Amino acid sequence: MQYSILGSLEEIRASDWNALVHPDNPFARHEFLVAMERHGAVGERFGWYPQYLIARRGGQLVGAIPMYLKDNSYGELVFDWAWADAYHRSGKDYYPKLVVAIPYTPVTGQRVLARSDAHHEDITRGLIDAALAHARQLGVSSLHWLFTDEFDTRQFQQHPEFMLRLGCQFHWHNQGYADFDDYLAVFTSAKRKKIRQERRRVREQNITLEVLHGDEVSDEQWDVYHRFYTDTFDRKSGYPTFSKPFFKEIARTLPRNVVLVLASHDGQYVAGAFNMRGSQSLYGRHWGCSADFHSLHFEACYYQGLEYCIEQGLKRFEPGAQGEHKIARGFLPVKTFSAHWIADPQFSQAIGQFLAHETGGMQEYIDELAEHSPFRQ
Image (cartoon, rainbow, N blue to C red; front, side, top):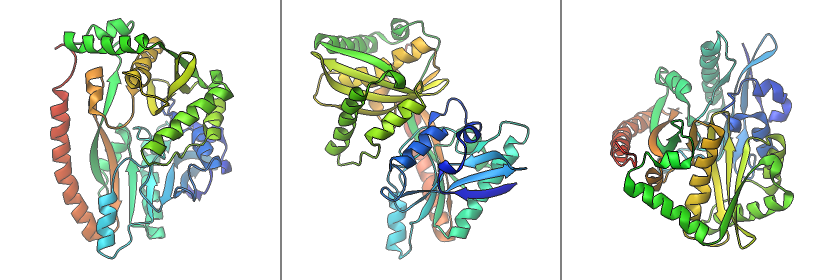
Protein backbone atom coordinates (compact mmCIF):
# COMPACT_ATOMS: atom_id res chain seq x y z
CA MET A 1 0.00 0.00 0.00
CA GLN A 2 1.32 3.44 -0.90
CA TYR A 3 0.21 6.38 1.25
CA SER A 4 0.43 10.07 0.43
CA ILE A 5 -0.93 13.42 1.64
CA LEU A 6 -2.85 15.77 -0.63
CA GLY A 7 -3.30 19.48 0.04
CA SER A 8 -6.40 19.68 -2.12
CA LEU A 9 -9.05 17.35 -3.52
CA GLU A 10 -8.57 19.10 -6.84
CA GLU A 11 -5.61 16.71 -7.19
CA ILE A 12 -7.84 13.64 -7.41
CA ARG A 13 -10.74 12.67 -9.66
CA ALA A 14 -14.18 12.98 -8.13
CA SER A 15 -15.22 9.57 -9.43
CA ASP A 16 -12.25 7.86 -7.74
CA TRP A 17 -12.93 9.54 -4.38
CA ASN A 18 -16.70 9.05 -4.50
CA ALA A 19 -16.30 5.35 -5.24
CA LEU A 20 -15.16 5.02 -1.61
CA VAL A 21 -18.08 6.98 -0.11
CA HIS A 22 -21.27 5.37 1.22
CA PRO A 23 -24.34 6.73 -0.64
CA ASP A 24 -25.89 7.86 2.67
CA ASN A 25 -22.89 10.11 3.38
CA PRO A 26 -23.24 13.24 1.17
CA PHE A 27 -20.85 15.32 3.28
CA ALA A 28 -17.89 13.05 2.48
CA ARG A 29 -18.44 13.34 -1.26
CA HIS A 30 -15.80 15.01 -3.37
CA GLU A 31 -18.26 17.71 -4.50
CA PHE A 32 -19.02 18.85 -0.95
CA LEU A 33 -15.43 18.79 0.33
CA VAL A 34 -13.93 20.49 -2.70
CA ALA A 35 -16.60 23.21 -2.61
CA MET A 36 -15.45 24.08 0.93
CA GLU A 37 -11.92 24.48 -0.43
CA ARG A 38 -12.94 26.61 -3.40
CA HIS A 39 -15.04 28.98 -1.31
CA GLY A 40 -12.78 29.45 1.71
CA ALA A 41 -14.62 27.38 4.34
CA VAL A 42 -11.41 25.41 4.81
CA GLY A 43 -7.93 26.84 4.51
CA GLU A 44 -6.07 29.66 6.18
CA ARG A 45 -9.03 31.90 7.06
CA PHE A 46 -10.65 29.45 9.49
CA GLY A 47 -7.61 27.32 10.31
CA TRP A 48 -8.63 24.08 8.59
CA TYR A 49 -5.63 23.05 6.47
CA PRO A 50 -6.37 20.02 4.24
CA GLN A 51 -4.16 16.98 4.80
CA TYR A 52 -6.12 14.36 2.85
CA LEU A 53 -4.55 10.96 3.39
CA ILE A 54 -4.95 8.57 0.47
CA ALA A 55 -3.97 4.94 -0.03
CA ARG A 56 -3.21 3.39 -3.40
CA ARG A 57 -2.64 -0.22 -4.32
CA GLY A 58 -1.27 -0.97 -7.74
CA GLY A 59 -1.91 2.65 -8.68
CA GLN A 60 -5.61 2.42 -7.81
CA LEU A 61 -7.20 4.51 -5.04
CA VAL A 62 -8.45 2.09 -2.38
CA GLY A 63 -8.77 4.33 0.70
CA ALA A 64 -8.82 7.91 1.90
CA ILE A 65 -9.29 10.04 5.01
CA PRO A 66 -10.64 13.64 5.14
CA MET A 67 -7.98 14.97 7.53
CA TYR A 68 -7.10 18.55 8.48
CA LEU A 69 -4.31 20.29 10.34
CA LYS A 70 -5.91 22.67 12.85
CA ASP A 71 -4.67 25.73 14.74
CA ASN A 72 -7.94 26.07 16.69
CA SER A 73 -10.95 23.99 17.74
CA TYR A 74 -13.62 25.97 15.91
CA GLY A 75 -16.21 24.10 13.88
CA GLU A 76 -15.57 20.65 15.36
CA LEU A 77 -18.55 20.27 17.73
CA VAL A 78 -16.64 17.81 19.93
CA PHE A 79 -15.38 20.27 22.48
CA ASP A 80 -11.77 20.09 23.64
CA TRP A 81 -11.25 23.73 24.65
CA ALA A 82 -10.53 22.62 28.24
CA TRP A 83 -7.81 20.27 27.01
CA ALA A 84 -6.23 23.13 25.04
CA ASP A 85 -6.39 25.38 28.10
CA ALA A 86 -4.72 22.73 30.27
CA TYR A 87 -1.90 22.42 27.74
CA HIS A 88 -1.49 26.20 27.67
CA ARG A 89 -1.37 26.48 31.46
CA SER A 90 1.33 23.82 31.57
CA GLY A 91 3.46 25.71 29.07
CA LYS A 92 2.83 23.29 26.21
CA ASP A 93 1.29 23.83 22.77
CA TYR A 94 -1.98 22.05 22.02
CA TYR A 95 -2.07 23.47 18.50
CA PRO A 96 -1.44 22.43 15.84
CA LYS A 97 -3.38 19.18 16.00
CA LEU A 98 -4.79 16.82 13.38
CA VAL A 99 -8.53 16.25 13.00
CA VAL A 100 -10.35 13.70 10.86
CA ALA A 101 -13.80 15.19 10.34
CA ILE A 102 -16.24 16.89 8.02
CA PRO A 103 -15.71 20.54 8.95
CA TYR A 104 -18.64 22.24 10.74
CA THR A 105 -20.70 19.05 10.39
CA PRO A 106 -21.65 17.08 13.55
CA VAL A 107 -23.01 14.14 11.54
CA THR A 108 -22.01 10.55 12.25
CA GLY A 109 -20.58 8.83 9.19
CA GLN A 110 -17.58 7.25 7.51
CA ARG A 111 -14.32 8.80 8.56
CA VAL A 112 -12.18 6.09 6.99
CA LEU A 113 -13.16 5.77 3.35
CA ALA A 114 -12.17 2.35 2.08
CA ARG A 115 -13.09 0.11 -0.82
CA SER A 116 -15.92 -2.21 0.07
CA ASP A 117 -14.25 -5.53 -0.71
CA ALA A 118 -12.56 -8.41 1.09
CA HIS A 119 -9.70 -6.09 2.10
CA HIS A 120 -11.94 -3.39 3.60
CA GLU A 121 -10.86 -3.96 7.20
CA ASP A 122 -7.15 -4.23 6.31
CA ILE A 123 -7.34 -0.97 4.36
CA THR A 124 -9.10 0.71 7.29
CA ARG A 125 -6.49 -0.38 9.81
CA GLY A 126 -3.70 0.64 7.47
CA LEU A 127 -5.13 4.13 7.03
CA ILE A 128 -5.56 4.60 10.78
CA ASP A 129 -1.94 3.62 11.39
CA ALA A 130 -0.76 5.81 8.52
CA ALA A 131 -2.63 8.79 9.98
CA LEU A 132 -1.02 8.11 13.35
CA ALA A 133 2.43 7.93 11.73
CA HIS A 134 1.74 11.26 9.99
CA ALA A 135 0.74 12.84 13.31
CA ARG A 136 4.01 11.68 14.88
CA GLN A 137 6.03 12.90 11.90
CA LEU A 138 4.45 16.37 12.12
CA GLY A 139 4.96 16.48 15.89
CA VAL A 140 1.37 17.55 16.61
CA SER A 141 -0.11 17.31 20.08
CA SER A 142 -2.97 15.00 19.12
CA LEU A 143 -5.07 13.26 16.48
CA HIS A 144 -8.88 13.29 16.70
CA TRP A 145 -11.55 11.38 14.74
CA LEU A 146 -14.96 13.02 15.11
CA PHE A 147 -18.44 11.46 14.78
CA THR A 148 -17.23 8.02 13.74
CA ASP A 149 -19.74 5.48 12.46
CA GLU A 150 -20.27 2.04 14.00
CA PHE A 151 -17.63 0.29 11.91
CA ASP A 152 -14.92 2.90 12.48
CA THR A 153 -15.76 3.12 16.18
CA ARG A 154 -15.13 -0.61 16.53
CA GLN A 155 -11.68 -0.17 14.99
CA PHE A 156 -10.80 2.44 17.59
CA GLN A 157 -12.18 0.33 20.41
CA GLN A 158 -9.62 -2.30 19.42
CA HIS A 159 -6.74 0.14 18.90
CA PRO A 160 -4.47 0.46 21.96
CA GLU A 161 -3.46 4.08 21.29
CA PHE A 162 -6.89 5.68 20.95
CA MET A 163 -9.42 6.70 23.60
CA LEU A 164 -13.14 6.88 22.87
CA ARG A 165 -15.37 9.77 23.84
CA LEU A 166 -19.14 9.36 24.19
CA GLY A 167 -21.60 12.03 23.13
CA CYS A 168 -25.35 12.36 22.57
CA GLN A 169 -27.60 13.60 19.79
CA PHE A 170 -31.31 13.28 19.02
CA HIS A 171 -32.38 11.31 15.93
CA TRP A 172 -35.67 10.16 14.41
CA HIS A 173 -36.24 6.70 12.97
CA ASN A 174 -38.93 5.88 10.46
CA GLN A 175 -41.11 2.93 11.46
CA GLY A 176 -42.81 2.77 8.08
CA TYR A 177 -45.29 5.59 8.71
CA ALA A 178 -47.85 6.18 5.94
CA ASP A 179 -48.06 9.93 6.57
CA PHE A 180 -47.63 12.51 9.32
CA ASP A 181 -50.95 11.67 10.97
CA ASP A 182 -49.92 8.02 11.07
CA TYR A 183 -46.71 9.15 12.81
CA LEU A 184 -48.63 11.24 15.36
CA ALA A 185 -50.85 8.25 16.15
CA VAL A 186 -47.99 6.65 18.12
CA PHE A 187 -47.65 9.69 20.42
CA THR A 188 -49.27 10.08 23.79
CA SER A 189 -52.40 12.20 23.62
CA ALA A 190 -50.81 15.26 25.26
CA LYS A 191 -47.73 15.25 23.02
CA ARG A 192 -49.82 14.71 19.89
CA LYS A 193 -52.07 17.63 20.83
CA LYS A 194 -49.04 19.89 21.38
CA ILE A 195 -47.58 19.18 17.93
CA ARG A 196 -50.91 19.77 16.23
CA GLN A 197 -51.25 23.08 18.07
CA GLU A 198 -47.80 24.16 16.90
CA ARG A 199 -48.53 23.31 13.28
CA ARG A 200 -51.90 25.07 13.46
CA ARG A 201 -50.29 28.22 14.89
CA VAL A 202 -48.00 28.38 11.85
CA ARG A 203 -50.93 28.13 9.44
CA GLU A 204 -52.92 30.73 11.40
CA GLN A 205 -50.09 33.23 10.94
CA ASN A 206 -50.57 32.97 7.16
CA ILE A 207 -47.24 31.24 6.68
CA THR A 208 -46.68 28.90 3.76
CA LEU A 209 -43.76 26.52 3.31
CA GLU A 210 -42.10 24.98 0.29
CA VAL A 211 -39.52 22.20 0.10
CA LEU A 212 -37.04 22.46 -2.77
CA HIS A 213 -34.17 20.35 -4.04
CA GLY A 214 -30.98 22.05 -5.09
CA ASP A 215 -31.87 22.15 -8.79
CA GLU A 216 -35.23 23.76 -7.94
CA VAL A 217 -33.80 26.74 -6.00
CA SER A 218 -33.37 29.99 -7.92
CA ASP A 219 -30.46 32.40 -7.50
CA GLU A 220 -32.82 34.84 -5.83
CA GLN A 221 -33.93 32.19 -3.32
CA TRP A 222 -30.29 31.39 -2.49
CA ASP A 223 -29.69 35.09 -1.94
CA VAL A 224 -32.60 35.20 0.51
CA TYR A 225 -31.60 32.01 2.32
CA HIS A 226 -27.97 33.10 2.68
CA ARG A 227 -29.10 36.32 4.31
CA PHE A 228 -31.03 34.24 6.89
CA TYR A 229 -27.97 32.01 7.38
CA THR A 230 -25.54 34.87 8.01
CA ASP A 231 -27.98 36.76 10.25
CA THR A 232 -28.17 33.73 12.57
CA PHE A 233 -24.40 33.76 13.07
CA ASP A 234 -24.33 37.54 13.47
CA ARG A 235 -26.88 37.32 16.31
CA LYS A 236 -24.95 34.55 18.03
CA SER A 237 -21.50 36.14 17.48
CA GLY A 238 -20.42 33.21 15.31
CA TYR A 239 -18.76 32.88 11.92
CA PRO A 240 -20.82 32.19 8.77
CA THR A 241 -18.22 29.97 7.13
CA PHE A 242 -20.29 28.98 4.10
CA SER A 243 -20.51 31.62 1.39
CA LYS A 244 -23.37 32.12 -1.02
CA PRO A 245 -21.29 30.69 -3.91
CA PHE A 246 -20.65 27.57 -1.80
CA PHE A 247 -24.37 26.87 -1.46
CA LYS A 248 -24.96 27.56 -5.13
CA GLU A 249 -22.12 25.23 -6.15
CA ILE A 250 -23.32 22.23 -4.16
CA ALA A 251 -26.86 22.88 -5.37
CA ARG A 252 -25.45 22.47 -8.88
CA THR A 253 -23.09 19.54 -8.20
CA LEU A 254 -25.28 17.69 -5.66
CA PRO A 255 -28.74 18.81 -6.80
CA ARG A 256 -30.80 16.00 -5.30
CA ASN A 257 -28.83 15.91 -2.06
CA VAL A 258 -29.68 19.51 -1.20
CA VAL A 259 -33.08 20.04 0.46
CA LEU A 260 -34.07 23.63 1.24
CA VAL A 261 -37.18 24.61 3.23
CA LEU A 262 -38.37 28.18 2.71
CA ALA A 263 -41.15 29.88 4.69
CA SER A 264 -43.17 32.83 3.38
CA HIS A 265 -45.42 35.30 5.20
CA ASP A 266 -47.80 37.38 3.11
CA GLY A 267 -45.74 36.63 0.02
CA GLN A 268 -42.34 37.49 1.56
CA TYR A 269 -39.70 34.97 2.59
CA VAL A 270 -39.16 35.07 6.35
CA ALA A 271 -37.19 31.90 7.19
CA GLY A 272 -35.25 29.01 5.73
CA ALA A 273 -33.81 25.66 6.80
CA PHE A 274 -30.99 23.98 4.89
CA ASN A 275 -30.76 20.18 4.83
CA MET A 276 -28.73 17.53 3.06
CA ARG A 277 -29.96 14.04 2.26
CA GLY A 278 -28.29 10.73 1.56
CA SER A 279 -29.76 7.50 0.26
CA GLN A 280 -31.43 6.70 3.60
CA SER A 281 -31.21 9.80 5.81
CA LEU A 282 -32.00 13.49 6.01
CA TYR A 283 -29.59 15.79 7.83
CA GLY A 284 -30.72 19.17 9.16
CA ARG A 285 -27.89 21.68 9.10
CA HIS A 286 -28.67 25.42 9.18
CA TRP A 287 -31.62 27.66 10.01
CA GLY A 288 -32.25 31.38 9.80
CA CYS A 289 -35.14 33.84 9.94
CA SER A 290 -35.85 37.53 9.53
CA ALA A 291 -38.62 37.75 12.17
CA ASP A 292 -40.03 35.72 15.04
CA PHE A 293 -43.16 33.67 14.40
CA HIS A 294 -44.70 31.29 16.91
CA SER A 295 -43.60 27.65 16.28
CA LEU A 296 -42.05 28.42 12.87
CA HIS A 297 -38.67 27.00 13.90
CA PHE A 298 -40.30 23.68 14.82
CA GLU A 299 -42.25 23.59 11.56
CA ALA A 300 -39.39 24.48 9.22
CA CYS A 301 -36.63 22.52 10.95
CA TYR A 302 -38.50 19.44 12.20
CA TYR A 303 -42.03 18.86 10.89
CA GLN A 304 -41.28 19.67 7.25
CA GLY A 305 -38.26 17.36 7.43
CA LEU A 306 -40.29 14.58 9.04
CA GLU A 307 -42.95 14.82 6.33
CA TYR A 308 -40.24 14.77 3.68
CA CYS A 309 -38.67 11.63 5.17
CA ILE A 310 -42.03 9.85 5.34
CA GLU A 311 -42.91 10.80 1.76
CA GLN A 312 -39.48 9.84 0.44
CA GLY A 313 -39.20 6.64 2.49
CA LEU A 314 -36.04 7.77 4.29
CA LYS A 315 -35.11 5.81 7.40
CA ARG A 316 -33.60 8.52 9.61
CA PHE A 317 -33.66 12.24 10.29
CA GLU A 318 -30.76 13.86 12.14
CA PRO A 319 -31.83 17.47 12.78
CA GLY A 320 -28.49 18.71 14.16
CA ALA A 321 -26.51 18.66 17.38
CA GLN A 322 -27.93 19.18 20.89
CA GLY A 323 -31.48 20.23 21.83
CA GLU A 324 -33.43 18.30 24.44
CA HIS A 325 -36.62 19.95 23.14
CA LYS A 326 -36.38 17.57 20.16
CA ILE A 327 -37.43 14.62 22.33
CA ALA A 328 -41.04 15.84 22.57
CA ARG A 329 -41.16 15.81 18.76
CA GLY A 330 -39.98 12.22 18.40
CA PHE A 331 -36.20 12.63 18.17
CA LEU A 332 -34.75 10.23 20.73
CA PRO A 333 -31.26 10.23 22.28
CA VAL A 334 -28.58 8.23 20.50
CA LYS A 335 -24.89 7.77 21.23
CA THR A 336 -22.20 9.49 19.19
CA PHE A 337 -18.50 8.72 19.31
CA SER A 338 -15.12 10.27 18.72
CA ALA A 339 -11.63 8.81 19.09
CA HIS A 340 -8.54 10.60 20.41
CA TRP A 341 -4.79 10.05 20.44
CA ILE A 342 -2.74 12.33 22.71
CA ALA A 343 1.02 12.41 22.11
CA ASP A 344 2.10 13.49 25.60
CA PRO A 345 1.93 10.44 27.94
CA GLN A 346 1.02 12.46 31.05
CA PHE A 347 -1.74 14.37 29.31
CA SER A 348 -2.95 11.18 27.67
CA GLN A 349 -3.34 9.59 31.09
CA ALA A 350 -5.11 12.65 32.53
CA ILE A 351 -7.49 12.93 29.58
CA GLY A 352 -8.16 9.20 29.76
CA GLN A 353 -9.25 9.60 33.39
CA PHE A 354 -11.43 12.56 32.44
CA LEU A 355 -13.06 10.57 29.63
CA ALA A 356 -13.78 7.61 31.92
CA HIS A 357 -15.61 9.94 34.34
CA GLU A 358 -17.36 11.84 31.54
CA THR A 359 -18.55 8.63 29.88
CA GLY A 360 -20.31 7.49 33.05
CA GLY A 361 -22.09 10.81 33.36
CA MET A 362 -23.05 10.87 29.69
CA GLN A 363 -24.49 7.36 29.86
CA GLU A 364 -26.63 8.37 32.84
CA TYR A 365 -27.78 11.45 30.92
CA ILE A 366 -28.76 9.35 27.87
CA ASP A 367 -30.62 6.82 30.05
CA GLU A 368 -32.52 9.60 31.82
CA LEU A 369 -33.52 11.30 28.56
CA ALA A 370 -34.74 8.01 27.10
CA GLU A 371 -37.36 7.88 29.86
CA HIS A 372 -39.02 11.00 28.42
CA SER A 373 -40.04 9.45 25.10
CA PRO A 374 -43.29 11.00 23.75
CA PHE A 375 -44.42 7.70 22.32
CA ARG A 376 -47.11 5.51 23.80
CA GLN A 377 -45.67 2.46 25.52
